[in-house]
Amino acid sequence: MSEGLASFLDLPREERVSISEVWTRDGLQGWPEIVATADKVAIVTEMIHAGIRDFDLTSFVSPKVTPQFGDATDVLEGLHPLRDRAEFRVLVVNKRSFERIAEHPVAAEVVDVTGFPISADEAHNLANLGKTHAEHKENMAAMIDAAAEGGFVPLMCVATAFGSPLGGVVPTETVLELAQWGYDRGVRKLMLGDTTGMADPLQAYSLHAAAIRAFPDAQIYAHFHDTRASGISNTLAAIAAGVRIVDTSLGGAGGEPPTVLQNHVGESGNVCTEDLVALLDRMGVNLGLDVPAVLAAGRHVEEILGQQLRSQVLRAGLAAGAA
Image (spheres, rainbow, N blue to C red):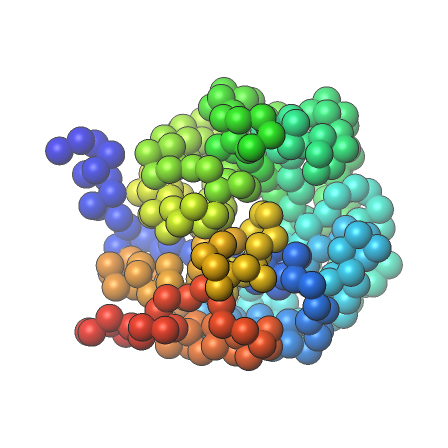
């Protein structure tokens, strides 16, 4: 039996694997209708009660660009009573993002982590952020400094870690060099993002294992999109490689490109929280979650958005003998 397969079959049973719920940020980023602040707060609250302890909560990109997050400070303030129950991260893009957070002291108390991306595919970075790697590194250095000044933990996402349609496959060396750049500046939360859903499980295992070897004292996040129906298998491979925190979205909402409106024809976005949680729980992986409560939150999300999303387990139910 190969070492990789042996590792896969020996998924962690005692050591905790954490789900980072991204529905209120990455899940809703491309949603065409503004979701009420109260609904966002309600879903996060439900998921905290279900045992989720990590959230990609909202974005401090300009509301002119992403109007869905015009209520970012309101969401943070709504969750202020639960600020000690979970770790909340927000997306930032420049120093102005930090200024907006600081303008609302109650909201600032809720923020734990400030996350920012750089695309490993430079062509994608130019298309998405309008900057070369060199230009964007200057911006990220300023954000790392601003995070320290604000008392926040920086999280650097190396997006398109497995390539993009613009620039094709990205060499592993490029991904690790970018991660090393952040690590050398004190970043100890590093995410490898399969932004365009191009990864396969072998690549997922290999790249995450390499990152864990290169940065043994860093917390490595896995973030896969289910664009080509490999999101769950890639996530399992990353867990087998040693990753202990993975991003997912209720209903599989979100992803890039924002194709959630075409779910009924098979297009897809993020890895679906309900389906991954049900599977890992069935496999005996220690999640520390109330699985029926997670599924209930998924049903609530469908009610809020007014359409059936991508969860298979909500349609078929838990497997016989499951929680």
